[in-house]
Image (tube, protein in one colour):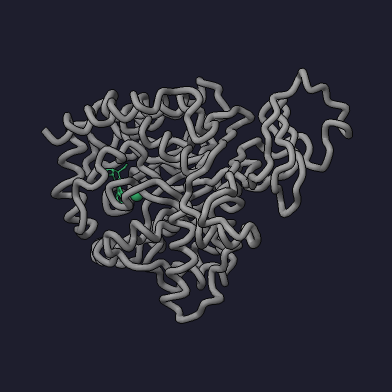
Length: 424
Ligand SMILES: O=c1[nH]cnc2c1ncn2[C@@H]1O[C@H](CO)[C@@H](O)[C@H]1O
Ligand SMILES: [Zn+2]
């Protein structure tokens, strides 16, 4: 058992007891109250620390850490067609493993305990997830570009991946289906994906309505907007769909999102960087739509620090609406914790008895966290993501700011080597 003693937890200085992978008890003087024997405990001194639920990043392409800084200042289609897809053609399992490992380390060191990913060569990603101890929801990103042969191949790879992940029987590694987007996937692929999601009871992760261009493209082909098009063949029925971006939406599409309980992964920084636009988050919140946060890949962000996303989410909508009361600190913090957990069906995102022990501890002796009051404001508007201790599924994976299970230096060296293989 792990006991966090005397930390700031849910606005009180108290203890938190972890048994197995769950939070067993939260309260004062737990050693006495729970008749605990110090010999059986790993005690973490929580003095001068705040404990918060681990953050949940609902849209990533984790191995893309290797693409950090290689194709900046471009619009989405040019970025994908002329740069990213050309480099991705050189990927292999080992390169992906190196990029994923770097991504997992980066996420853990900035307080993320769960991520929802879409990418290729999942063997490499699974290996990195296992070695770092992070919680992953992993999908193979299917792209058929309307070719029948490719479609079959993509669906087969997805099905194989789901089976492979289920077979691992590791509650920290979960399968997801990842049709890339309506502009890269045929209707048949999307329909088959929907059937597979029901058959295997897995969620679907898809890019939706990211740019005006892609919406124009879908409208020309189908006379419908993307959400209307997918809804016309029941894509959203009886499955859990996490749709990344949702930048440009009509009233009717907002109604579809609301009525079909579709979760939105808001990626404000990626949307700004690719000049895609700004999602109408306050309006979606008014419609009780579940908003979660994602960083997207490092090719378009350019990091995986979800605290930056939390701050951006709170600021950007104030600026756009000329209203400082929208998306307050509590809202954007909930996007990255409670709402993310809810979307992924995880009993996490809050520090509660019975919840998963996915916990982040932050040392408060940092200039940007002083005065040590109004912490919920500091965490959103002032903190930079530099966390000290991370516990995932009841295991300490980051201690005193250092990775517990792996040698960080080696990870950086591997990533550097992998990067040169990609650009040469
Ligand atoms: O913002 C984005 N919009 C569309 N595609 C993206 C974005 N970021 C990464 N990818 C691409 O999605 C595929 C993963 O399965 C990869 O090809 C990746 O480059
Ligand atoms: Zn993306």
